[in-house]
Image 1 (tube, rainbow, N blue to C red):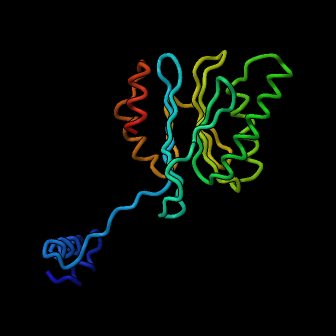
Image 2: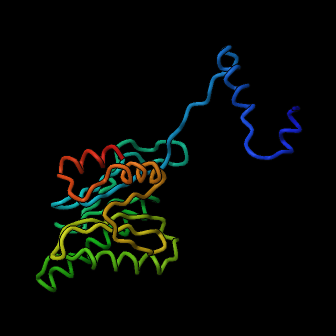
Image 3: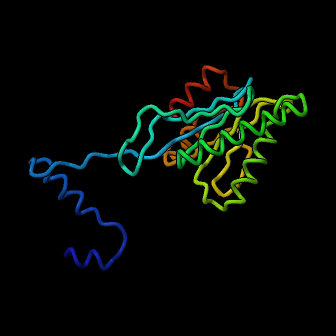
Length: 196
């Protein structure tokens, strides 16, 4: 069957793969290098608390701008979050939330609640309809126990036992779906977060 007839049938055609492999084997061309861009942030609940993790690179397109950036932000003594997306937007919303939670704590004399941080994040992000380009995973322990929440740039939130966001979220989610258990120890949760 000719090449053009195969194209008319539709579906996938892997003929170029064979051609590219033959050219690479003869050293006539070099195969392009894979470039990873973007952020991956993850979080999971284990039996005694929450583990959140993030990579440490800041990228602009396919260029790594900074290899050592902090993407885990303290909101209160018992609440932390990871941010993916525009670094300036993430820093702005987390610093604003840290200040708001501190004011609430001073006014009430009580420990901050995760639900307070999540609802305030969601309201702020919804108000800007996605123009604040940050996706967040908020986690911590309060009077209601360990909680983890994923917040989209549009202000949508989901309380989950594990969450991933960012460009590498699908790969990380596949690891969580295969290996997550409800009764993980701290060491197991850390190892799973690092793997994801």
